[in-house]
Amino acid sequence: MTEWTTLLPIKILVTGGNGQVAHDLVLLGKQDNHFKMIPLNASELDVRSVVSIQHALDLYMPDYVINTAAFNKVDAAEHELERCFSLNRDGVRNLAIECGALSIPLIHLSTDHLFDGHYASGYVEDDDASPLGVFGESKRQGEEFLRQYHPKHIILRVSWIFSARGDNYLLRTLEKARSSTEIEAADDRQGCPTSAADVGRVILAIIKQLHNGAEAWGTYHYCGAEVTTRYRFTEAVLAAAGQYEALKTTSLLPVPSRALHIEVERPASSVLKCKKLLSTFGIRQRPWRSELMAVLRQIYQQK
Image (cartoon, rainbow, N blue to C red; front, side):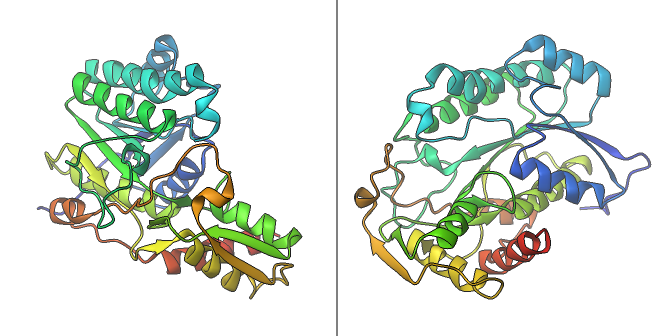
């Protein structure tokens, strides 16, 4: 592939602009003068509204759209079906139709929750989707609409996202560790933690190659390197955070998922195999442990 060059910055419109992945993605993009990042929050671009999408596309005329807007609350999705499907299914359909009409490539974030978790060895892109709950089903249907309405798309499925902001397992664990002497964590759920910044890195690397002429549309998987369990990830969080502050937690207990009384079953295995991304774009996985240390440094520098 020839060296990637451009005369004008590539304009990238990011939906869900105040989310954790969007935040880190935009920060990375702003550090590269090849990109002009345009983050829009829900009040500026509501993916549920065709008129709102059309207005934003006409106003900014982006070269690419990255869709991070979503309803991501897995348990709440069971009770807020209309809102969940309007964002995760209908919003994707709206973006696909409007971006397709203007031939603007659309990069869409999806999830490991499309799978039921029965494949302990992990999932490839062509494995059949079998969601366990409303959230996963809404994301599955959103993917199908995107494939149907817009050929120039990238679906990037990610898992176990953590960052220094928003609502994620890492931050919830730190909150518990500051107030509770004992924490329970599932030892029967495995996956690959992935930092929001790492996802941003991957997306921008993909766009560089697409902009240089790569015709590699389709579905891809990305997650941090090294399979672990929720228990082992929690253990790593507590050990690393303990270098920065004295935590109240003195005991971490491995328990089965059913003991945590979560409303919606999670996949027992959320492992995503990333060989297709490597063979197509040459993008390698980064170890989640080094990403965890970087995120924790960011958290404690903010204090």
